[in-house]
Length: 133
Length: 275
Ligand SMILES: Nc1ncnc2c1ncn2[C@@H]1O[C@H](COP(=O)(O)OP(=O)(O)O)[C@@H](O)[C@H]1O
Ligand SMILES: [Mg+2]
Image (cartoon, rainbow over all chains, first blue to last red; front, top):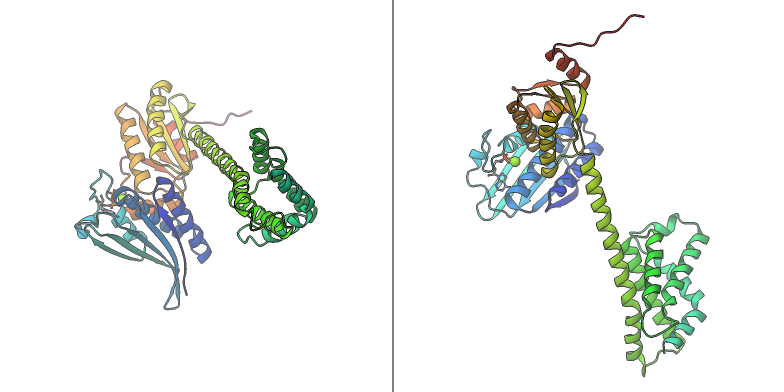
C-alpha cells in the first residue's frame, strides 16, 4: 500500500514546495510536531543538496506500510555529478561548498533509515524512511 | 463571409451556448461550474459568447479595442487559464460544427472558412494568454516586494537592545538582506545586544543555521552580542540532530526570556512600580 507524490527541484523555491509536500504528508500519516519538523528538515537538506550540487532533480514522498508499521519515505534523486566518497560526506563537517557539512549526517540522524546510492557521473539517489511510532 | 458567419452564430447562439455549457461541465479539472448557480453560468456563458462574437460582426481585421475589452472581461471572470483556453477551443469547435450543420460551410468553402476562422480565434487566445502572463508576472513581482518588505528589519526596542523578528522561509536572498540589515542597524541604533527571533521560521536547516551563525559572528566583530531567541522545542530537537553547535550563542525559547537576559547583560531590569 503506497501513495506517491513528487516535486521536481529546479529553483530554490522548489525546495520550499518539497518541504510543504512532505509536511502535509507527514501530518496526514499522523506524525507529531517534532517528527514533522524532523521530516521537513531532512527534505530541506536533501532538496538543497540537489539544487546546489546536481542543479536539478526530484524529491518523491511516499507513504509506506511495512511490518504493521506506517511510515514516510523520502526519495531524493538526481542525475548530477554523484558523490565520490560517500563515507567522507557522512562525516560531520565535510563540505565542498563552504557549508556546514552537517546535512548528510544530519539527515541520517533525523530519520530512521538512510541509504545513499551514488555513482560518479551518473547521479545520486538517497532514500530515507521515518517510522510512525 | 465574416458577416455570414456572424449571422449564423447569432441565430444559433442558444444551441451553441447549450452545447458549450454541456461540454465545459465535462472539463474535469475545473470544478468551477459546479459551484456556480445556473443563472450565473448562463449569464457568464452568454457574456463570453457575446465577447467572442463581438469581433466578428464588424470587419475582417480584429478590432484591438474590442479584443482588449474581451481580454479584460474574461480575465475578470476569474477562470483559470486552462479553463479559458478550453472555453475558446470548445466554443470554436462548436461554432464550426453548427456552421457545418447549417450549411454555411461546405466542401467548397471549407478551406477559406478555416482561414477566417483561425484569424478570428487565434488573436483571442493569444491575447488571453498574454494577459494572464502579465498578470502573473505582476503578482509574482508584488509578492516579492511584499516579502522583501517583511523580510528583516532590526527594531530598536530599548536603548542598546534591538530585535530582529524573522518570519517565514529564509532563502539565499533573504539571508543576505538579514545580514545587511543587522549590521546596518546595529551601527545606527548603537545596539549592544541583538535578539534574533526565529519563532516565525518554519524550518531551520543547516543553511539557515549557517546564515544565523555568520550573522552572529559579524555582529560580534562589530562589538555587539547576538542572541538566538524563539527556538521552538521541535526546532531545538532538529538543531541537535543536525549536530549544529550554537555554543557561542545565548539561546532562549522565547523572546521574553531573551529580553530579560539582554537587560541583564546591559545591567538593567524591569521592575513593577507600586501605586
Ligand atoms: N546530490 C548530491 N550530488 C553530489 N554531491 C553531493 C550531493 N549531496 C551532497 N553532496 C556532497 O556532499 C557534501 C556534504 O553535503 P552536506 O552534508 O549536505 O553538507 P553541505 O551541503 O553543507 O556541504 C557536499 O558538500 C557535496 O560535495
Ligand atoms: Mg547540504
